[in-house]
Amino acid sequence: MCDDRRKLLVLLGSGSSIPYGMPSVREVDELMKRWSSERTPFQSQHTKTNAFKILWDMSERYYAANQYGIHPNYERVLGEMTALASWLSPSPFGNPTMEALSGCEPFSSLAWSRESPNEFAGRQLILSQQEFLLEKLARYIRECCKRDFPLAPGFSDYAKFFRRLQEHFDVGIYNLNYDTVARTAWPEAFSGFDEWGFFDPLIVAQRRKWGFIYHLHGSVHHCISHSIARPWIVWKNSLEEEFTDRGVPPVDMAQDFRSIPLTTLISGGFKLDQILAEPYQTFYATLVRHIHEASAILIVGYGFGDLHVNRAIQNRFALSDCDARPHPKVAILEKSSPERYRTGRLEIHQFWSWQVKHTLQTSFHDGSKFQSEDERRIEELMEKGECEIDVKNRSAIWHGGVGKAFIAVDKFIEWLAC
Image 1 (cartoon, rainbow, N blue to C red):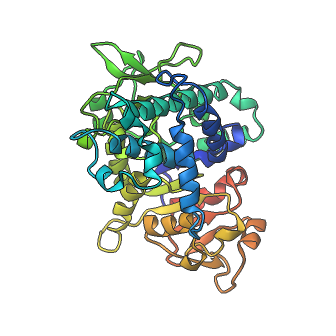
Image 2: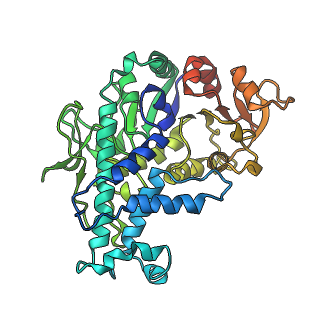
Image 3: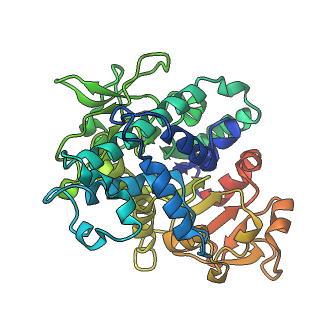
């Protein structure tokens, strides 16, 4: 190994937590559909329009014929709700494109708001349902996190994996999930909040040490504080406490009067608008810095669906051909399906593969690091416990799932440390 104290940046996606009882995106999709039919505070017996369901059905029809692996999910639909709320707002607080869409199918089926004496009725209904869904999700994930993770099958391998990484690297984790799986494995990691639960952006921005877990998109430990002295998000250690998961969004949170929900979770479209609030803006700023500081990057169970994260990585890798610093080694721990074979080849039309290629500025062949002359199928690599290695020998994809990867920790330490 070259250097056993290099800086290792870890990105945790939803796939890293699913083995320990956290819901998958598909499971949340179904929960959102069910929750969307429930009554929200702004709905009455005369107004039961389910904006989430309408937009979900529209998205399904829109994506039905595509061959790029793009499908509707709850985050896409929540983003469409934000856009639609803007379109249904009167001038000058909405979007001028509403004039182009007015009276056209399928927009006309959503024009019910104009029948109301309140010009903002449609906007309020959509946003209240959106906030309601995010509040339901926060409470659901919080309940899931009350289980005893150390007793979950395979969790000891998960915890050992990160302990071993800390023996060889200065580790910093950006958790893109809301759950407490990573923090259970590494409870002493710096969270960005002090012992009283308050966030200090200056301390986080000036901190040079690593050894942190930052929740870029919110956490079940986050609670909205209505304190005049300390507004916005506070951290509560005990999940048994009372939590406030939504509040009144400020008028200056987003561009062009777009209303962004003030919730403890960052989800859906327009995430760059959502992360303008603290602590997320500071965490995103430090993410950019830490990507440039990192000697190696480990990506676990991430679907490359967050453009603001992808571009932060891509901007660093775009410098690699003209920058004097060595290119960070990358390992991606993923559970692949057969249609993802030959990751670097665009003819398979897989959105995930396309995002990997462009985010990391790399391409892949079918051979392994050890037998590059052979064109092996991904199943063979998985059976032999080997990674797919890109042609520049800089990035590796483990297709066998995160659980098996945690057992093979030494293999990844060797790869990332050189």
